[in-house]
Length: 427
Image (cartoon, rainbow, N blue to C red; front, side, top):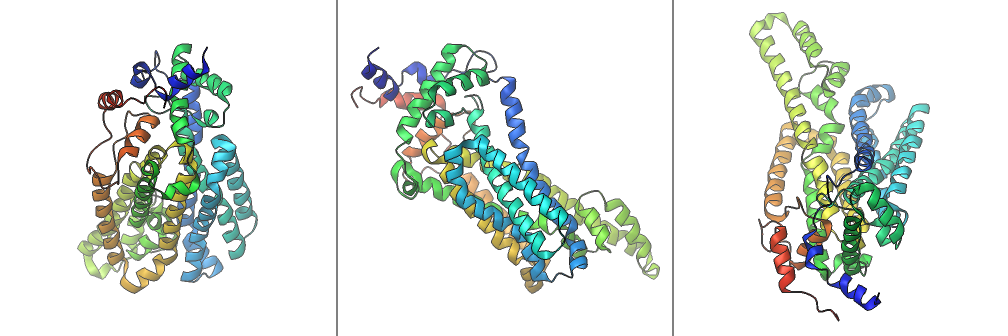
């Protein structure tokens, strides 16, 4: 076969290739499901670590006689470790791959947990949480990229092996993941090669240039994670026990149980029995109801975040950057994410002492509204698109302010646009 002909085919995909017809059947083998579930378990490490901090913070405050500053240090040490790993995570993800990165993150979490279990002192706890933070940050970034890249094309497809020029291994992995006919595997492989050919010229510093609209994409990602953290979600989780203690839960143990969502009934009974009986039945009922309302509001907030802003932000981040810089771009954005989280967590107790909890919660509510407006105006819809289609469409926009409220073009529109502006065969 003429190599020039093959090159032209890659540079100017046929209309059949552009249509990106899904493979016969589901296009998703059991291996995809197992791998995605295994990778997504890394999210449990982050959630468990944040919830664990809230659960033991009041006890540690009494056991180690921690001041407000020391409590903030203990909580934010996890975030400091995450920030450190984000600065090094991009090269690790791009050089060693997503799977090896996930294995490394699990090892860091296990090592840090051993330190936390075996030694009880402020220095040891801080060091252990730094190590765990490094592991959870790497797992959070690596898992999102890994899942996005192994999913079937109607959801997204794998690319790392092709980017590393291991085409034969990529072909075998695609055949295992897709479970479809060989011709569909070859077609998807050609699509990936064509997309990577365009994107592989990017360097790290081009993230800050206007090439392929990378700077605007990076600013979009940075603004998204900054606003996500500015809603105060990290503090709601990390300081749940002190917050509930401040709104009327009468003991450290009760506030800790309530912060996990399991202790509100026992606390209600305890609060009712412990109040001054001279204040009457109405007072007891109202005070218990207010405490219950605070707990329910916290649970609703955490649940809403967990099914929306929590997971979806990193899904969007894994989709808006081209393959050539995706690992490094997500690493930069993740560093901003953890830096913002660190700043907010390190100052929470100090700010609440200055202006009070209600005013802090009002600020968080205002930032949630700003985030809602930002998402509506500036974040494109990527559902049902391949990573190549998303990248090609976003590269056309001059700035992320352009065409606000517009979604990524439907596939039929994109195909029509591509047909009208075909690349010459000798380009």
